[in-house]
Length: 323
Image (cartoon, rainbow, N blue to C red):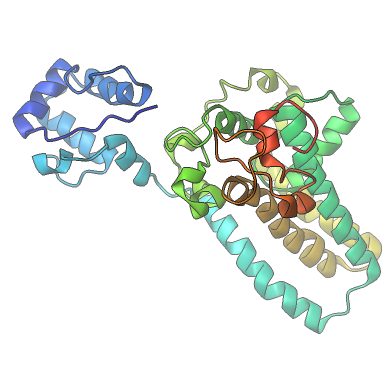
C-alpha cells in the first residue's frame, strides 16, 4: 500500500480540506483513506478544535503552523509517536538483564545438580516445540490436526514461553504473512530494521500491532483459548512461577530451577523466536521466492526446530514441515 503525503498545504487550504474532507485524497489507497476518514469525522468540529485534535493524535506540536504539514506523512508520524507498551517493555528489557546478571552469579556460587539441568533442557524443548508446533503450525496456519490432549499440552508450553496469548500471537502472525515487509501493516516488518523486527515492535503500541482479532474467527470460538486470553497474566504466573517452583521442589532445588529452567530458559526461548522475525528476514538464502525478505538460515534452524527455513515457510506457509 502506498502512503500518501500531505505536502505543502497552507493553513487556509488545510482548513478547507477539513471542511470538504476530500481534497487530501487523490487515490483510494487504504492508508490514505485513514487520513480522509479522520477529516470526514471532524467536519462538525470547529476549525480550531479539529486542528487541535489532529495535532494531539498525530504528534504535531503546533497545530497553527502550516510548516508542520510540509513533506510529512501523518501516518508515519503517528507510527513514530506510538505510546510505550509499558508492561511488555519493562518485562522484555528486565528479563535479559536479570538473566545476564543472576545466571553467572548463581552458577559461580552454587552447585547445580544434574536434575536441574535436565529440567532446564526439558523446558527448553517443551517451550520451543510448543511455539513451533502449537502457536505457529497448528493454530496460525492450521497445518495439521491435533488431539485435544496434544493441543492443550502445546498451549500450556506456549504460555510457558510468554509470547502473548494465542489470540495475540496468531492474529499478529497472520497479519505478518498477509502484509509481509509492509512498513505500515506488517507488525514486525524487517523493513524498519533489525531492532524493530526483533523486539522494538513490542515496546510501543504501534498501529500495526493493534489487533482486532477479525482474522482469527476460528480461534475466538474456542472456549479454552478464550480462557487463556482472558486470564493470560494468571496463566503466565501459574506456569512460569508456580509450576517451575513446584518442579524444583520435587527435585530438591527450587531456586536453581527458577534461575535456569525459569529465567534463563525464558530469555533464550524469547530471542530464538525473535531471531526468526529479524535475522531470518536479513541473512540467509532465498531458494523458493525473492518476492519478500524471508530467508532460509540453517544456523537458526538448529535452535528453532526448523523455523529457520523461513523462505520455505513463506512460500509454503501451510506445510507443517520446517516452520
